[in-house]
Length: 399
Ligand SMILES: *Cc1c(COP(=O)(O)O)cnc(C)c1O
Image (cartoon, rainbow, N blue to C red; front, side):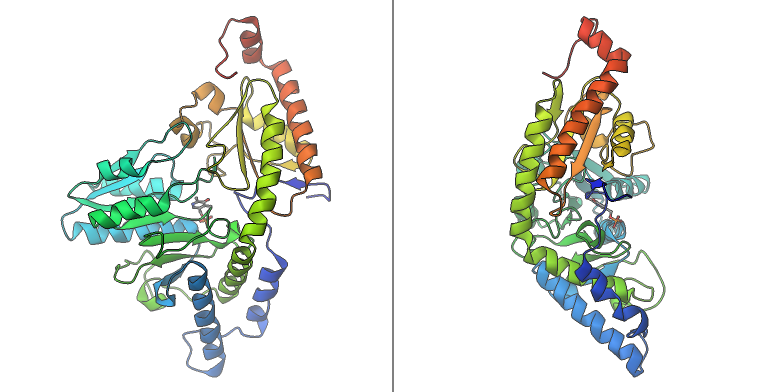
């Protein structure tokens, strides 16, 4: 990346903060023991690990014993869902409630369970991309062993009414998991106050290192191993602990939570400017709720163009963006999230996600608005679909 790069793909991953990098370095070459070793080098590492566990727990309103370190958000999602399924089937409960807009780490785990005979209800969302707590209430059955609903969506940024959904689950006696990977460090998280039983977090979405995250599981919820082996993480997740990454994550989470309001205010202002600028492009539409969305998320569809070409031409101008989910890029299927909010295939292909960090500037936003407007116009000029729309052969879907 050159100096002039404008990085607007923070929902895919973030730059590590200096604080997080500095918190890691001593654990590569000074405190490098294995926390399972009884000697002093091992015990120094074990102490650091315990300290980090306490600090991340405090950031989400949990107790240290409720935190299991994992290799990231995907593993935490897998372990939460598989554990609830195993706990459920012991009681003859094999039904799970989730939503159509979850991350693939959730959706693919649910598909795996369906093949094992579980039944899964995927709730739809309104055009605003939000699930209503009443939908969850109506979907819960006698044999429901888990409700899993993400806190904030990674593509369109919409925020779900997590505390209310948690309350519905509590009242019904059903465990509630939330994939909070996009939310942690960006929105307030309080596991106890928000009625959350299990919650997944990943460090690289809040300026921490990649390949580390954690699963919160409320005391009393039994976890089942995804990784078998040694007795690390109270026997629930084998493998020598990645202490440098854990220390980087703890530092990054504390920093992000400490600056949460300030960062949100800054990003919300930039987001407003970007949404206003892109809305001025004819036949464009904002995806997801205009207000109930992550401070840094902007997602648009532009009629008559392909998202992939848009991304490549923006990249030529030094702008790093995404069409939505990093996991679907390279596949020709339109985003399942855009289809779920009712965008037809034709326009779901022309999507653009710009995800901000607090380090972005107004100047970068101005430059991006100009670049997107120019590139969209250029691509439409070459698009047979656009020609048909303009000539009236096809009807516009957007205004
Ligand atoms: C990034 C992301 C994940 C996956 O986290 P990894 O740490 O990359 O495995 C899961 N869920 C959501 C909502 C995400 O944005």
